[in-house]
Image (cartoon, rainbow, N blue to C red):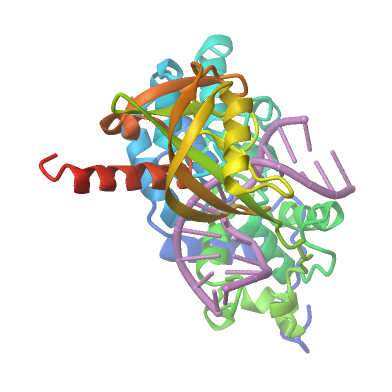
Length: 376
DNA sequence: AACTCGTGGCT
DNA sequence: TAGCCAAGAGT
């Protein structure tokens, strides 16, 4: 006991639930967030929510989750869906490999696991898109397994609570954090324990200006006792993202525009776009676009009016895209460097899953057409 | 082990 | 503004 500092012991008796965990669970019962994926233990629902929540804020996920569960209410519905339909439902959420992996995994579970989502982290991690965190979250929340989850919230909360001075994202730092979490995991209540720490991280133990005065765990918090809670977790800096200039062509023919589909893997994999590509050194925008269209589609184009300039920041680089209205001069386009190709009428554009920039281009095309043809 | 993979909100 | 970084996984 530490009567002098007023801080409680951080070590629970082996096999029992710690005082810290008990206090946390009481707080969770009273203050937990009401979220659409809570109040069910349906493994499919839990799984979908956890995939959507990867690197994505709760407020962003909620409308997507609701629409998804309406459109694909069961594993079987998802397994039977077309990939384009799945990607369209995911459009705007980002990290599109999550959607493709979830879809593949659903088909795998239906075909190889008789439609039963596995309950152990070991088996769960065999599913595409399910890593250490998601496996632990599904196993603990949907199946009641005693597994500690480690996400951004828990990493931050635990780094403060246990005053972890190693870089929180390093393998050593994460191992230390997981050991602390495992030591406090209340048997049979891991799902609530994990979610309670996520809610605490979202509402109290926030990245900036943590509300320590409202924290149910304040008396156990080692970094607060030392006054270093705002210096935890220890973060490492990222390199500044490079700036890239890109061109794209809106190629018109017979009232339709040409779309290409990006390769399945990599950035925006499987999504549709207006063809084009990256500007090289010493190249003008027009030269760049002619070259890219020649390489991608094997045709020569005539470049007309600029449609707009679009800026977008990805995680690791920033793009400035120049879009031009264009038309074909020579040749019939073939998808040499794309997975597929389609001529789309304006009213069909909404059916093609696209990333942010290309959706913006498509929206601008619709605006232009409405101003050209006010009647519709 | 370090890099890639989206988008949006916040400061 | 520009940087930070969210309920991470795959390679």
